Length: 175
Image (cartoon, rainbow, N blue to C red):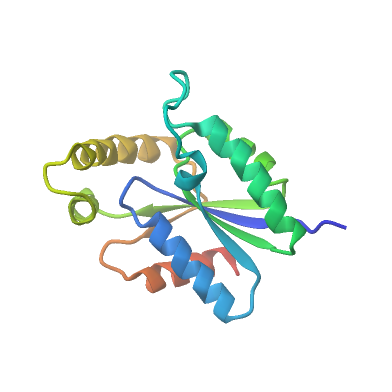
């Protein structure tokens, strides 16, 4: 008998701390003996070129997530931590379906745009096309996510460390 997964989707603009928080939450749970896996959704869609009709390879991401989640479920993982971007309300059900059902809580990680852009400047080469793209996208995505309001909870990251943010997320989802 397959057990339902409980999943948390760490949502936010680029540089909000989704992947870092996901890793910190993974280790908090593992340290307490709680079966879990963390999935960086960027890795599931990273291929080139993306179809002209699917700028961010979203469909490939969902197909890969379905396969990966199924594999984790088969080996007994009960909780999945997803780090990614969720822009539209209709997508919540598509992610839930890709995960094979179960509870899915969406938590937006949020920081002041100045903090996010400082993180991006530390992550990318100065004056690189990647930095310019990420700086522009951070503003665009922040506006999209603020307007969409898809999140069950919002957690401020700001100057908090990854383990503090992960503990706040864990408290909200009851893991």
